[in-house]
Length: 289
Ligand SMILES: Nc1ncnc2c1ncn2[C@@H]1O[C@H](COP(=O)(O)OP(=O)(O)O)[C@@H](O)[C@H]1O
Ligand SMILES: [Mg+2]
Image 1 (tube, rainbow, N blue to C red):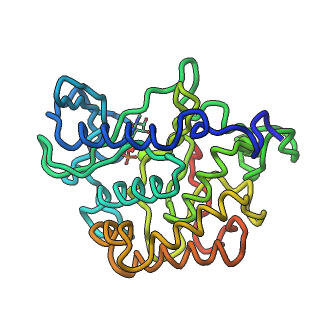
Image 2 (cartoon, rainbow, N blue to C red):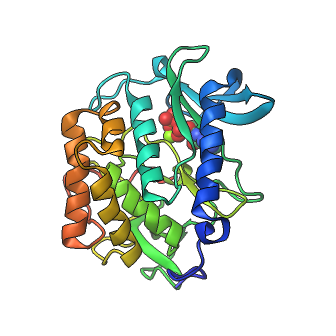
């Protein structure tokens, strides 16, 4: 086991769920209503990703702005609605109470409609993915680590790709299964200085077919935690026809995609297990970072 067990005190226990909710509400207000100023462009991104500040009533927040016009078309997703999927992923994350996705809104900006998301400063001295991923020699993941896959590392050598046995990652693995995340790679894991872990880049989520592509396979086939089962059971209620979450999601994804979310939640509750790779789709993003 890693230093952080299942029974460890979570961020919410320290802070109180209510405090976090009201902080998030304030942040969403600034992101939605503030004046958006572009500071620069993130070069390594495949879509247009602009680093911005947003200012409202004297409060300034750093954020990313991904204009819909800057979305690169994909063969398997409809054009011009990756931003909606990012917003939908945020709403599901909030509904879990796990707060795994930075505050995300849809709004107009200097390059038109897009998604605007709170910028997460990387924890100091850490690579974005921190100490969450590693390549190790041999076939044993080792204490505190979970195996993902054997990987070719050049010159005919292989290494074992592993991720940390970390409760934050385990929650994210459940969230990814619910939203059917097609791109959970290392660079999309952001450990923050306050100890929270955030996931980003959820544009390729909510497909109706099983597209789960992730590094977080370490728990595949293992029983879900009691906490995850409770969260999924409450999510099932929040997704019922006419419930507020369902109504909000219905504005962002299609009716069949919304039904597919319900189906995935129901499947997770029925099997009580973390999903396994479908075998019909490359299950691991490559390169993994
Ligand atoms: N909310 C955020 N906080 C901090 N960094 C971010 C955030 N969103 C994006 N980034 C940075 O910008 C890069 C590109 O963003 P990403 O959402 O992955 O765009 P793309 O859809 O083009 O892959 C990320 O790999 C990350 O380094
Ligand atoms: Mg990306």
